[in-house]
Image 1 (spheres, rainbow, N blue to C red):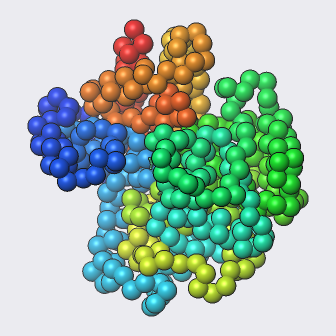
Image 2: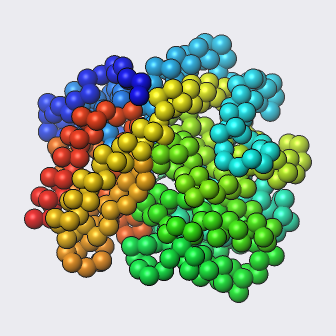
Image 3: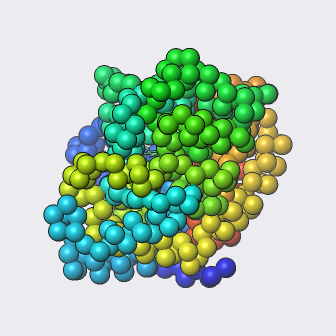
Length: 446
Ligand code: PLZ
């Protein structure tokens, strides 16, 4: 594999307790300036970031196992992305693609059409956020089918706008008191092998399909939207066969099958898109996060007949496909290809999974170890049971942070530690982070 030249030393170094004094000063200003409804996973303020490290404002070098929630797969300051952004910003930062179009948008669409699975003809539209991509995938599906109902799943996360809140499963903190929500959204049971013992992929799909047929009627359903591996809901990997069976049913019944690959996309799970693992080629894929090296950009790519069904002017937005974000995306895609990030993601999984499994063998607070490529998780439970332990999970994340490793939690029950390192993280740094995490789980469980 190509050697990566890092700008910052790839080392974990603590020079203060966390948060350090400068982070504390900024946090005080924040309390008086930033709305209280915005949370942050860690109380440490970033000054610089490169490869697998985040340097904070006090000079601490932290290992990043979160990538800003699966965004900075190419690193937070990939030189190719930084140069492309600077060059494009010096030319024009914005004209609005709906007013005076530019080539970069077209080039991103061409790249995404070529990269997305399935040999059908494809079209792409660009937006700003994951939620906006999801909203637009549903708009297209409803228009193209003339149907209203949209099916999402237990544990799903699709965003925080009104329609995507309706699609998201978890009330606190995403939905509570923010309703009423968009209508015609229906929730079906997910395949969750750890909590669903004995229900294989085919049986789980049958269960969901039966409910759709009985409760909605196939001909009322515009779209099924599903994350191929659920992200915020707990890194839930459905049992093999679940996704293909849903897709087959959708195809047979004129239902648009949408894979929300906002978190799983762009090499994260060891293939360009997670649905490729089981040979699933969705009608529409939603993408964001890893797409543009940290610049805000999202996309939907899908069957040409669906996307071209929309009347001219029906899709868009002032900033959608911003030229600086498009330049960043083209550069990030070049980096992903040159560094073969799908292979790196697989290598990260192969390096980390055996250690996580060994830890699970040693400690009965780890109920499950799962994930694919560089999207990995441990689910924490009360000893010897499958009862979720969110307090222990918080304690593990806090101990890891205190030792200089940023890890994120997730899960419907708040009891999952998730690993989403930048795909450019080096082996030594990853090993060090895993050692810290192992110690954090052991200490928190003791
Ligand atoms: N679909 C599958 O994972 C974003 C959000 C965290 P936006 N996930 C992280 C939070 O607390 O807000 C996400 C996702 C999937 C859609 C989205 C939404 O993407 O870019 O945050 O709108």
